[in-house]
Image (cartoon, helix red, strand yellow):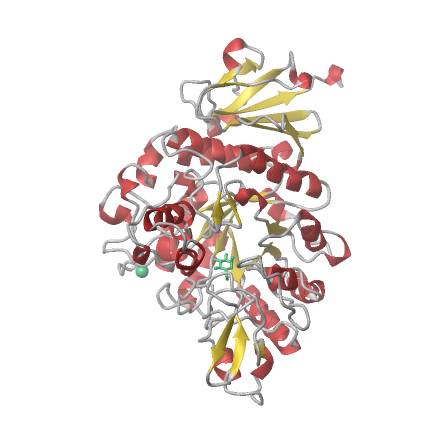
Length: 572
Ligand code: GLC
Ligand code: CA
């Protein structure tokens, strides 16, 4: 099914994990009052929409991804009325709003679960997956995937934390509930959904044992892209088609091949998918096993998705969200903080797809380092520490957590250099990264060369150009271990984006078909180099730069340049 409207292709999104975004009512917890006050700031980035991580009532075992009421707002974040105020103002400002739809599981404090555990003759009995005997699946977040419930006298399945029992999507009543929830928010005016771990919702009949030697993910072959997934997805798609809404699914461990079934052809049920391939250039299964960053792995993942979806589907583009440590601390360098933060922005925003920017990414926030595992709050971080890293020394375990914890992306946003980083007037619910005196919005607003202003330039440039939105993607020199170089082309216009991931100056080769061509330098991240400001783009006051000029053959650490070429008519 094709949406008649493809507005989402021209857009970019800002993701809000509200608890750490901005505290508007002075209790140390981010909320919708804070969001309301920051809407102008969000708009000023040049984005066109907001994705809200869950705002619903939740016991917070997994910070909102364990929902106890799908049709309300968590009292810590505000009220339904306040949400509507935010929605209304966002719409007035031309910002779309999408909600997180978490329906693989609920909280164990959701009334459905409280009923379901009462017994087999309860009307909610089959809302969850109950068994007398567990299989051998591991949970991704907490020990084994089965928990014994004394009240019911059976085990329930939880692929994530114990407090996140999996819903039984094979039950038609559960699917009706999901559709009801979708309609509730669509009727209120939201513009779409980000669908949490949506490729996990259909489980293989009989729940067979998984391979014993695959820790954590042993059950995955039986719950990823399960037997009825596309039927269920079609039902949800039909609801969205009644509205002009769009759907992006989170697809942990999805492959391009299986993603294509969601994104194209007769089983098309999503407009985009969040894949994880490119988030594994320094680890295996985010958080579990670390390895040194490999640019080759990153480029392969980027290009695999770009080429596979070309002309068929549409990519989502991201480097950060609430589930991954900060990208400068991973793929960049905190030493070359500004250079790598800006280069990383251009490395993904100009690919074909819709960019998503996570709160704090636009100012280059970095990982936090805490001194004891007890200081971390994320359930999966604690699980990794206590389960998978057991053989290491405490020191090494903490180092691994520092590299991998989701908590690094969940520290309060650094707004200014006042106490608590201007996030709140009181002690915030979680640690503020001590680097907030240097890394904060206020300081970067003032600096034309800041990471913040570079994000603005990238988003403005992308929006100004059909080529950068719709153009074909092509990668050059895929085996180069230092440089990621890609082209976007449309009609007679081509863009060449050259990103150095090296800490030392490196020589850059020019692709054969560019030799002797003159390009205009549209963006670069070294202030002393020729640079064009976003607002002057429209004036077309570009500096002409010959790509072959000797001084442009060397790239400085983490340097990035974006060139634009236009074929002369007679060359066609
Ligand atoms: C998704 C969410 C993550 C959550 C998990 C379980 O991966 O992004 O934050 O913990 O699903 O809901
Ligand atoms: Ca608050």
